[in-house]
Length: 328
Image (cartoon, rainbow, N blue to C red; front, side):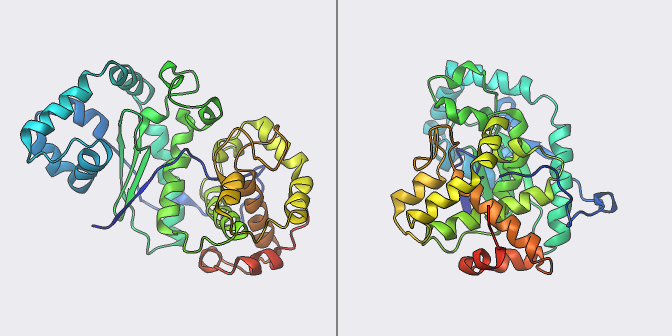
């Protein structure tokens, strides 16, 4: 089966003050339910029962053992067992695993949020497959995986800003996206990106507005989530973006960056970082994506006849900008 692995030092992207959602639906009318399958528990409990794990988790078991963890194939039993046991005996892993089990002992709230979001997704995009949703641990490796039928998240990447194991692994600016409350949004964001892959990577504008479209869907499908959780910013960073939106847009225009195809320039605007290089050091990283969201929001506000399906099908990003009437 074709699959895509998404490595996220996550969150691609926003702002919204819980304004009215014109795409709101009554999610209670659907009987769709999301249940998280706990590979994290099963793998530790049943490591010796490889065949049973393979049968239960199928494609994901292969992805986890061979592509994420590099344990090799269970068919090579001696190497596989050695690699697994070495991983399980690692003290850092044990600390993370025990913390993960406590942190995610009850995932009912996450399941409820995912259920609501997928009822939206299935309503507006009925052809979309509802995936198996899995939680796993990876020793801080691959944070999220999406295939044609599986959506999986490594929960040891979401143990909270104060988890001691992160101190030597990540930069401080990355911790905002590594909290338990980020889990539901990251699950949904990755699935949306998987369902609507980026097919055009030429200019800064293309990238900004693609990310803006994904975030517009995330906002519409998870309307109860606070804006700082949606984007993995702090409330102070959201305020900074709002207060400086006009200045950021003016700077991009004056430097003629909007239609640049310079790869390094794009990364400076869109990648996770302590701040966005072309803006003051008080700015958050990924501020280019934040602006992309604002443009998409303006486009949808000023073109009320455009459906969500039409928005996601539209790949003429210059047209979106021109018709958005965006004037911060």
